[in-house]
Image (cartoon, rainbow over all chains, first blue to last red; front, side, top):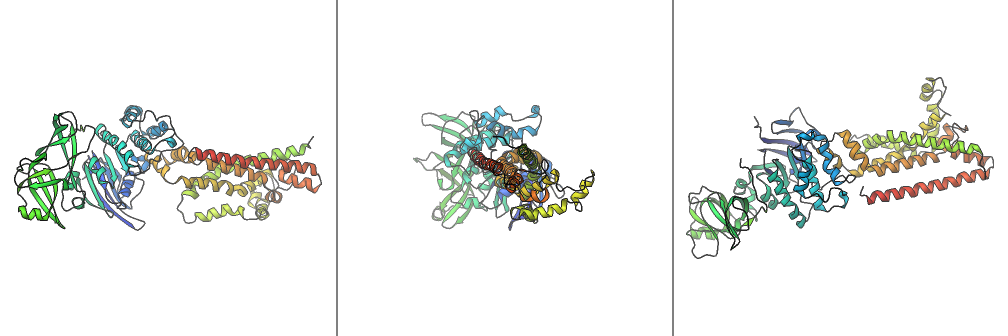
Amino acid sequence: MIPMDTIHASFRDTVGGFELDAAFTVPGRGVTALFGHSGCGKTTVLRCLAGLHRAAHGTCVVGGDVWQDAGAFRPAHQRPVGYVFQEASLFPHLSVRENLLYGARGAMPLADWRIDLDEVVTLLGLSSLLDRSPVKLSGGERQRVAIGRALLAQPRILLMDEPLSALDRPTRDEILPFLERLQNSLELPIMYVSHDLAEVERLADTLVLMEKGRVIASGPLVELQSDLGLPLVAAREAAVRLEGVVVNIDSTYGLMQLDVAGGALLVHGSAQPGDMKRVRIGATDISIAKVRPHASSILNILPARIVTSQPIVHDMNVVLALGEDGGGAKLVARITRRSWDELGLADGMGVFAQVKGISLLSFGALQRKRP
Amino acid sequence: MTLPPDIWVSVRLTIELATLTTIILLIVGTPLAWWLARSKAWWKETVATVVALPLVLPPTVLGFYLLVALGPNGPGGQIASLWGARTLAFTFGGLVIGSVLYSMPFVVQPIRNAFQAMGERPMEVAATLRASPTRAFWTVAVPLARPGLLTGAVLGFAHTIGEFGVVLMIGGNIPGKTKVLSVAIFDYVETSQWREASILAGGMVVFAFTVILAMTLLEKRAVRAGL
């Protein structure tokens, strides 16, 4: 039995010698990232979800509706999805406005629209582009129009296939805030294909980790980030993401206090008390001390407990849980094995995590209804 | 300078033939081109080859087979018997059938190329925007293939106007019924009416020049528009 509020997908197929055998069930809300190296089959999975590709053996149930199973296959144009391709793929013979409204036409009666043109235009900053030809837009503008067009088809799920990968760095930074606003202001589940960990860390709630056509893990991003059995932790840029509430602003030093599960962090930036913020802490930015260091320039020194650890070459990956009781959010620290041995660290031990660097992920305020 | 009235009869007949042929070819050729561009059937290239045959075959060969097919003992004769006629050969209807077959590759090829150049993506985008395949075809594929459709129409029209061998084989030389321009020129030369022949020939040169120039300009405009 598949719960109503989930997206369940299971696709088996051989496409040109490539074997796809991917299955996952994820929550039908928030952003789910399909993450893996190029060629791991994540785009094919997304195409199967959209009905653009029919996997030889597949099941696809979204929010209780069967889109594909042994006997049935709902064609793409009958699925309530919005799809954003890697390249904007706007219709060159239509104006921006006509592009935006192309899918809106057949969607549903105007009264039932959940997303209207004005809302999308404001959200994506498109007002000055409406009467122009897509041919004359910049790459970033085009991709924003493509996102708006997908939204106006009144989808029940938004599928995005590396929507930023064809863009250069500055353009990407221009669009990312739009995506964050999108996920905050619309109650729309998003499946997001990406091979860029930084993007995933910024956007995803749930992660589906793929490798060579298979799903190797799926679950909440923060859990997978601190799972020593997965390749995420082994990566050089291993990190965890934390989410917290702004409780205090110290304008003298430009700092704010962010309460996360099991501790409080001082982070550079400004916000309103009560705002939700996400931060990223790299594994190499955390060091471990057995006693609380005094007179240190490091701002964030938090009591934590070692949950588990794993040697990789000459380093140790150490999973910490914040709080003296170890009941808080998880961190991953990368320390040398020599330090591990000399300090006599062991799993279950109470320690202090010294956090040297924290990066604030969301520019806009995350004001999400908690499930 | 006066031209004999039968020249104008030939001009009108030729334009009627070319217009009708072009319209039929667009109606028949567009779905055929779509199928050739999209289908994964292994035998589609066989169909494409049959369509392309008139490019290589001598017009007289095509004309010969058509004459047999349209004549009293062929399927054309049976169809003609429906309205009491004996044959489709040496009729305007026969000419239209011949022209459609003879000019088909010139219409189908550019349209097929345009559909192929478009790729799968626009149709996929349309599908994810809830457009049925029919709506996607009319609102996306056809507008995107417009340069190809225009080229096909112009080439089909021009090629029909210039055809000679097939017409002579199946249509003969009946004034007002099957005597088209190219046959008329031949006729004038045969009867040493050089002035009339050169007027018609010159007119055809101007026509050909205009057609090619117009097509080049259209293509340029299409490139500028990003189509």
